[in-house]
Length: 369
Image 1 (cartoon, rainbow, N blue to C red):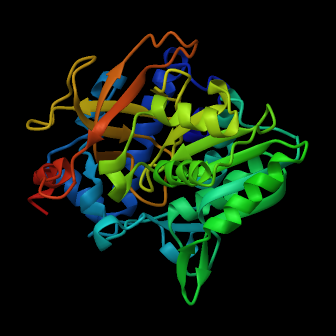
Image 2: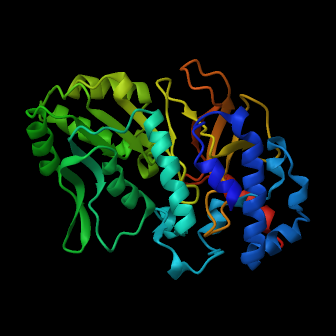
């Protein structure tokens, strides 16, 4: 997987022009590998008469049949034995079904290089000792979700002094420790150390509302940061805009806009998309994004809403090179923030109650299987 190694160890973190050719080569390499080692994937490509030789430019990437994320919640696809993977995860299991994912050694090394470069570019790496409030799960062997593991490892971005988790195991199940995180944030605010608050937006909103309810107003260290990710999930109806959430955070914690970060990723596509100051998710050199029409699944033009198709040659453990999500986005260029890469903005998700998901409709791709 020489082309993959070159791609994921490049220093052109957000430069598509310099990496387009290498990206296509890495994708051709990736698809060929999975065709050889995953019989289910080979059958899918065969049923759609797909030939990897038809992919020669980034404009051709749409030809690779995307796997709907909903399909992967019901079908495990492996190109390497699962018990040989060095890291194993599952999706959050919305609706009770989970996607298995994981890293073999080569994928893991490429992922580490990618993460360091993306986080460095977005100024999330620091040598300063830092306190953490993690609005998510305290690590436990019973919890193998990708989000839980990501929350655990994100603390390596800055050396931790103390980590306080919002969700802790009690009597065999997770419970929110409200008093624990309230006490921790007050204690941390009195120390001359940065604080990082990490977790789900919905939990962060509840955290800010609880601070307001208790009439707690503090001013955190100037290098403190907020890093959110994971979406609103079942609390979608209570979602507010990022600007409103920032204003709440600024009023309660004294956090500056430049230190307010939002992240998007999926278990099936473990590439972090970090929002810039304009709240836009820029696409790193290690992935590409196609926006597809909801009905025809054909690529749409710039600024036209459609379903999000994520593409990356990262994994050799599973054939997850092209994943169709249930997120509705628009894709554009020229953000104005200084990041040269194209970006996408999430407009919503289709998969809420009484709405048929786009990925369910897109499962027509796999109707022959």
